[in-house]
Amino acid sequence: MTKFTLPFTIEPTLDQYVLSKNYDEGNSFTLTVPKNAQLDSPITLKIKPTADDLCFKLKVVCEEGSSAVVIEDWSGDVKSKKVELEQQIECQANSQLKYVILNAASSQTHVSEKRHSQIEADAKCDIISYYFGSQKVESQLQQKTVGQGAEVNTDMVVRTQDHQELSFDYEHFYVGKNGQGEMGMKAVAQDKGMVKLDGMVNIAQTGGGSAGYLQQETLNLSPDTIVKATPGLKIDTNDVKAGHGSSIRNLNDEDLYYFAARGIGPDEAKKLMISGFLGAELEKIKEVRGVYEKVKGMI
Image 1 (cartoon, rainbow, N blue to C red):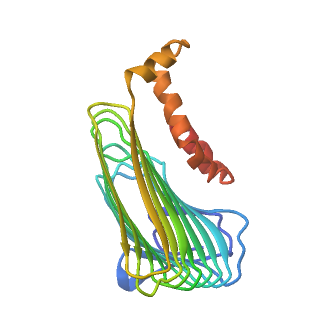
Image 2 (tube, helix red, strand yellow):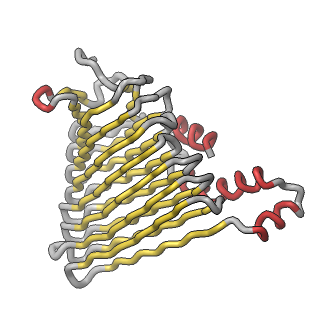
């Protein structure tokens, strides 16, 4: 289907979308879902196994009236020391996109990513991301509603292990009128990992009638972790609904005693707590069977 080298494989290889290379922008690619196309099967972008540095740009365009699910899968044998990704999502009027990210790169990988989405009138973009790999992650994401009645939802799940350093700076920016959306940031903190969650609901002066909510939740399973969670609101107009919340739950002796009384050891108790904590997030991708099974196996 393509005559250029890709940093990922793509399935299915059908003419339901268009993949092009932007030669004037270096290693840059555009994936386009044509106008009014209703894709029944997910488009999977599976990053190729490599130890070389990975640096590329990816634009995803859902044209007017289209609908698609796109999966960005880093669960292969990706051992790059450096990953740099710039992404732009564009959802045109009345389109719908569910974008799923599965980051399970090796423990030596340093990921730096900047993701932006622009959502037009009556369009919807859901971004669901799972970060279960990499030594260091620096992730920025902004979802922007520019058309009236646009909807953006973001769900991010992260789990630290060993000495990982994971930092996320996420924003929902409501520019058009009557926008709506929810942002959820969930972290499981283990071992000596560090996780930093910055979330922002930003409603511009032109975003009257918008409604946005942010929730940050952390399950802390080790006394040696560092957890920083900062929710924020920036409201520049009236007639809006906005809110945020943040909570951290620590594993304590009482929890372990409760499990031990039922014959459940500390390691199994932690697995059960993680499964319960992240259960609702799994339900959001249950129809995407391949990713659902992978994520379930990683919890």
